[in-house]
Amino acid sequence: MIRVNLIIEGRVQGVGFRWFAKELALKLDLSGNVKNNYDSTVEINVQGREIDIEKYIYRLYEGPNRFAEVENIRVREIPVVEGEKDFNVVLL
Image (cartoon, rainbow, N blue to C red; front, side):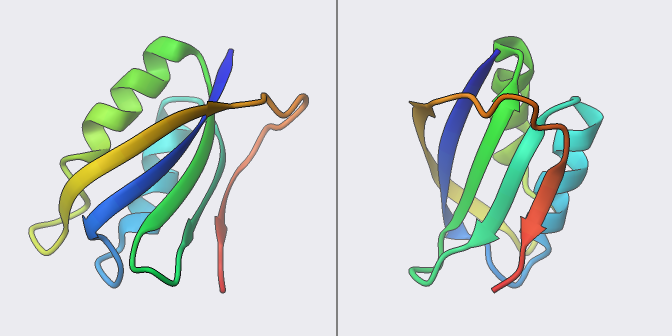
């Protein structure tokens, strides 16, 4: 199991991206959270099997709809959160 921090750059706010990220994570049995940042990026902390996280990142590039446009995803590994089961949308 690994956990990564993702910073999603592009047109990713106001297009349903956080809810898309949550639904996709649940389908892949991943846990974590997603939130909008003030700099117009979306930040995701996600953990699970490495192969599932790779699938997740690949699918994030597709976005939720034609209005979203992912230009880049910055990835860095972070410590696993033991016992985490849910994937939450953090509302500001």
